[in-house]
Image (cartoon, rainbow, N blue to C red; front, side, top):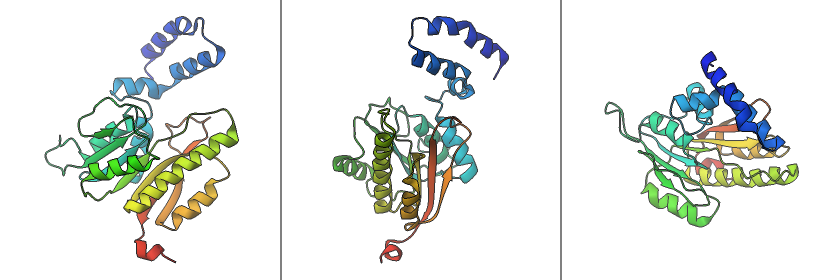
Length: 236
């Protein structure tokens, strides 16, 4: 990080911490020290999480112009910003095919050119799935990405159960639509082995991915599945 930026951060740090609880202080210090937080501001991304998807896309070529993509758990819209540029859903690059992007989240999302946002919508409900299908207007989904996670309860076993419910809902939707690529956030836990084995029944490849932009002390990782098998080939 630029040294002048570091100096500016730490000059403001004591004022930011004053009167705050210890947990809040620790979070603020981590934010001040995190180079991706400032980088997101400089490059006009809504959140540091953009760089996780940028890194994974650069390595695995997940997103391409003209594709139809669904971004699940998209608030505040940082992954959607990455998707718009990669698939050209805003049509800004006239030399490339225009893609189509849907973003869905329980929170309201500030509008972004090139995205059909479904805010205040719980993806896990049947009504949400129907809204997505309606918005697709018959388009074939290429890729589903999900940075969705439950609010932490502080109880490890409950948090693990909750996130597995979410990732299973993404997997079910992905295989029902026949999306060729699925990228979903998970937290490291004992159920992941069974989940990966289930995914492998429907996808040619399935791997764990931990981008550098994910904090090293975080249990967060991603599962990347590619090459959807035809529904006939998955029937027993």
